[in-house]
Image (tube, rainbow, N blue to C red; front, side):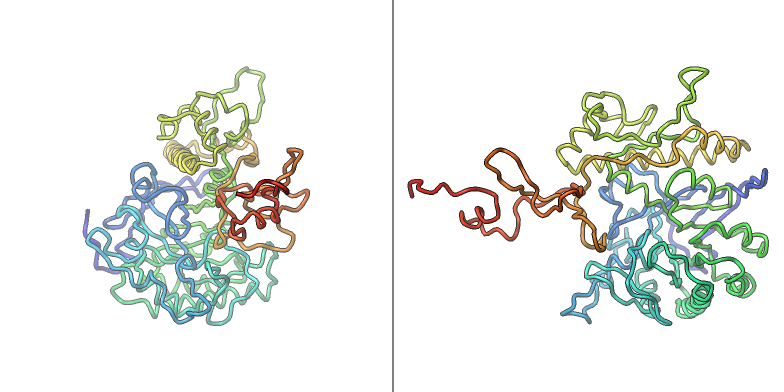
Length: 495
């Protein structure tokens, strides 16, 4: 393993554009992102998203063994909970000891494989909607103890202490749902982001090993023109910016036209494209690296991805069947299927197991089901990006992207299987929401009928792994009878 460079972080992390596909209006390009001591990443590519520092359902050793990922995105809000009774207590992540294998605290605390890059942001992707707005010096974050305030100074200190490979400075984002900000609010978002980036760079230690990806907020180009000009004319020549973090890739055509000196920088999309169709469109706009929440979502839903950039030929010359993007392994037809999860897939799940086994695991709510699905779905997506890079090399990207759009459904199917148990730090309930976790106990009825406890009529519980016993039942016969879990036979002989 190569020792980490002690030079300017914008110079230590290199990005090389290998080939541009400036045809048919496409700005897609081939590139290579490299950092001393880490796996080289060929672009276009994607970074895995984590929950509390780990890829969901995959242990760090299996990330290194079975996933072809060069980077993982982590959210600071996953680690900085402060209980109400201990508001001044320092989160444990800041006291993490380092080792020779993990010389950086963030790598050490999360046990991330040394070859994998770490990317640190303030909030998860997608972020939980916040009832509180940002202030001039702070943002609202969602921790396991609820919404809390994270000041700009605290975030800067966290980056300096944890030393991620890539850090995304705070941006003034609006997390109040799908409401489009007004022009006045959008201008304030750009101005605050500009101010916060300047203070971040001023607070960053001169010998920091962390590369900075400047955030580009999701507001129209004219509104943030002054901020982008400062990036291009003032900060880029100082070699303090190593890349761009885009919350809306649609700004790229205007950005690249007006500020061509930003073109050599790598572009990380934080926009969470919902389908591979959106990925292809964003690549055509010039995006290099993606964060893809749908990957974890489809795995939790019991779906196995089945798409590829080059779809299989139709069964007959006259066939015009639209192919699904994934298959639901919880459906009855998979109960006896001895085929791999996806044809021609060479991942561990497909070479060692078959669809019927995954169906059984999902039916039994075994954690291994989602582990194998994660391995498979990451492999399918890695191959998808490898095929995209090959098409860019052969100048066939535009043609294959159009064929893909004609061949596959526009959305993923709705997975009907059991989901893993939802945790409180992952979701924020809103008014009218049904229960996300299926109750472990059911109402006992003498006629054999069963009625779910705690689920409103007409709502579908998001069935997930649940505790074996309810906390509120003390185990006595009277308590069990009162809760509906049993009946006391009156007149029975007492022992």
